[in-house]
Length: 170
Ligand code: GNR
Ligand code: NI
Image (tube, rainbow, N blue to C red):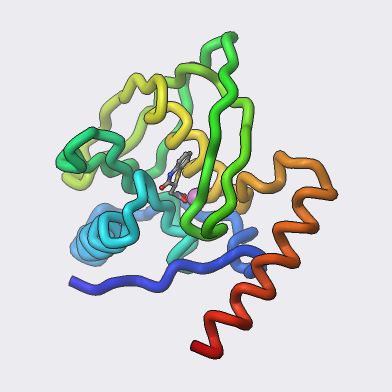
């Protein structure tokens, strides 16, 4: 299994819109396994293919306490969203060390194909609901910092460019 490189904001490739997965074949299953390995290694609760520079509609996540309940969402679509909204503190593996509050639907139902290519519906609330919406944004080329004020976003952009330069020197 391979550890994949996670793109860092403000990499323009993070704004690519993903296309549907055409077939859940060996290539996709290998990508799923590499993405899960990469997500667990980075201590993340979710990872979208966009973040590893693959622009296909594929998400992995695991919001369980023991980190032993991987969820694979291929060609996900939200089929139900609650009217109720909730504000949560979010972070992103593509924007390391930045956390801020984002308002999203409190509950969503997502319909997707699993690793076996079979369709299923997932009712998500709490962190899982936040994660589904955060990851589906990635597939649309959207990063959570785009919900923040332009001033905050510019500060984050500058900080990330500086951090990338420092990390490169190490
Ligand atoms: O690991 C992650 N934690 C997290 C915490 C609050 C809200 C969203 C997330 S997703 C993030 C991993 C990630 O960047 N996925 O795209
Ligand atoms: Ni993210």
